[in-house]
Length: 359
Image 1 (cartoon, helix red, strand yellow):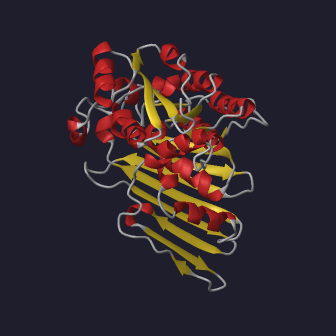
Image 2 (spheres, helix red, strand yellow):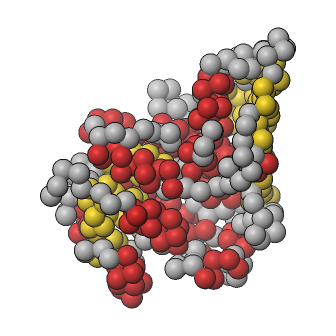
C-alpha cells in the first residue's frame, strides 16, 4: 500500500457514523474504506454498498484482522471499551465516539493503554475543533482570567425525542439510519442526557480550563428511568467550584444552547457558542471581544475525523485527548451516583488516587 494511503475501518456504523464519520473519511483521498461493522445483515450490506467498503462483517474482530491504520468506534456506549482496546491492540489510531465508556475505571485504563502501545485515542468532541475555540483555551490556560475560581456551564439541546418515546427527531427521518432506542433510552447502556449530551459540555469545560474535578453533588430530572435534565455542583482540585446543567428541552430544529461563564482572580470570560460570542472582562482593563463570524460555532464533528487520519499519516494534532474523555466519564459517573443518593457528595474517580465508595 502507498505510504500516503490509510486503511480505515468503522465499528458501529449507525446513524451518526453514516451521517458524519464515514462521509468525512470517504472525502479524504488518502483514505481507503477497508472494513465496516454493524449488526443486522441487511443494514450492514446497505452501508457497505453505499460507501464502498471493501469488507463488511457483523463481527468487529473480522474487521480488525485486516489491520486498518485508523479505526472509528461508534458502537453503543457500553461497547466502547472492548472495541477501542481491540483496535489499539492491532496498532490502529482510534477515534471513539463520546462518551468514552460508561465506567471511569475502564476509561482511564484505555487512556493508559493507548499511551503504553504508542497509539492515539481521541474522542469525537466536535466543539473543541470549531474555529477559534482552541484560541480561547490558550487564553484561559495562559491566565486570561487569572486563577479560575468558578465556572458555570449550561447546555440545552433539541434531543428530548431521542431519550423518551419512539418518535425520534423529525429531521432524522431522512437520514441514512435513525438513532437506536436501545442505545439512547436504556440507562444500563448509558441512555439519557448526561452520557448522551452533557458529555459534550463537561469535556469542553475541562479542556478549556484545565480544571481537575474531585467531588460532585448532583440531581437529575428523570420522569421515567432516563434522565432528561441534570444539575451538578463540582469541586475541583484547586478549590474552584463548577456548575454543570443541561436539559433535553429545545424545540426540534433549533441550535443547541451552550454557554460558559468562567471567573477568576483577574477577570471574567463569557463564552456563548450558540451566539458565536466570546468576551473577556479583565480587572486591569485589558478587555477583549473575540471576532467570531455568525455560524462559526454551529456544531459539526468533522475535525476529530480529520485528526485521526492525520495522526495515522504522522502529522495530526489532538484537541480531544483520551485524558479529557476519561475525566469526563469520571464526572458523569459521579453525577449519576450522586443523583441516585439524593445529591450526596460523591468523589470523582481518579486513577492516581481511587477513593473508596467512588463510582
